[in-house]
Each structure stands twice: as C-alpha cells, then as structure tokens.
Length: 103
Image (cartoon, rainbow, N blue to C red):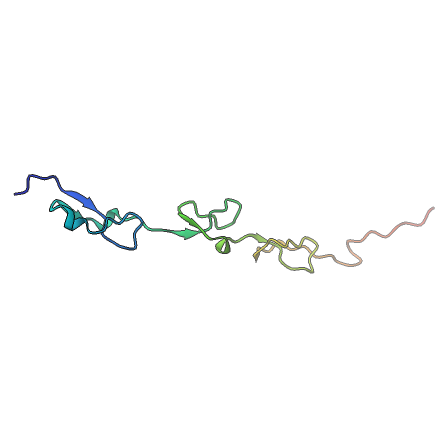
C-alpha cells in the first residue's frame, strides 16, 4: 500500500493543463482526464449575436451580427453578417410626401 497521497493530473497532450511525463515523476500520480482543460474557440465580442462567454480563444470571423444586409434597403448596415428580417424598403408614391401647392 502506498503511503503517498494520490495526485490526479491531466495526461492529454491536447489540453492546456497537460502534465507531461507525470506518471514517470512519481508513483502517486494518477491520470484524470476529467481535469483536462481545452481551448474553446468562439466569438468573444459581447455585441455579437452569437457571443460565447465560455470561449477561451477569440476568433473574430466566427462573430455574427444581425441586421439588414440588403444594399437596396433604406436601413442597410454594412456590419451585418446575416439578414435578420429588419430591412425596410422605400415604397415610391406611398412614402414620399409631395409638396402641396400654395392655396
């Protein structure tokens, strides 16, 4: 029976907290995959529609911003990465007020 306390460690080389060669260091080291921490790539921009607070690494190309991305619409927004249905279009003759003739 070992008199040393067991020391649990992450032995996955892909993990951020890997302890390489731990099993060779001490007989009390025990692999514990549930302790491994991995990089989670995502959008860390809080203004994005798909902000992921749990991500550990930011990749801007994953961020999505809803808005009107139709250049024909009156409320087109160049920062929109997807159309969220908010586009507004001019309706000729309906929305344009014609000046009135003096009475």
